[in-house]
Length: 162
Image (cartoon, rainbow, N blue to C red; front, side, top):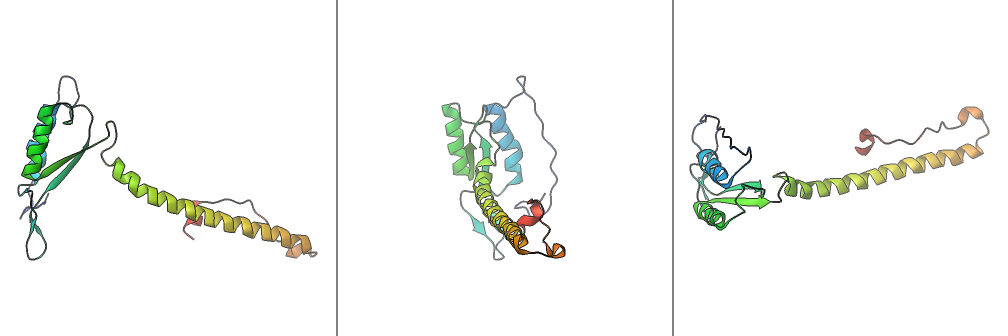
């Protein structure tokens, strides 16, 4: 793994288990200090870049949910988070029992979903219109060989790419 380091380094894996089988504030702080911070030895509240734009040092954001054991239950946790911010890493808490990326993904997905809905409406409107026009034209065609074949209207993912 090469993150802000001049060479690639390998790190041993880290595992710990509590009697309650759940995260505790103490364990979470230990995890941050033992595992996360080792990956960013040049952490700092200020950013500095070299001539090529590579990071020399800077801040790190750690996002987690605010469930039990995630630094949200007592005053010492507030002090720990203030200390981490002065050091250069920021712990951002999201909703409990939620995925750590959900808020960002919801924002990203909102635009995607709106565009998909808009495209679906455009394609379905055109498909229905084309079908309606064939039905109308068939009413005036007397030669049976020239009658339009009218299929059921269906939409599939390939229709949405048109």
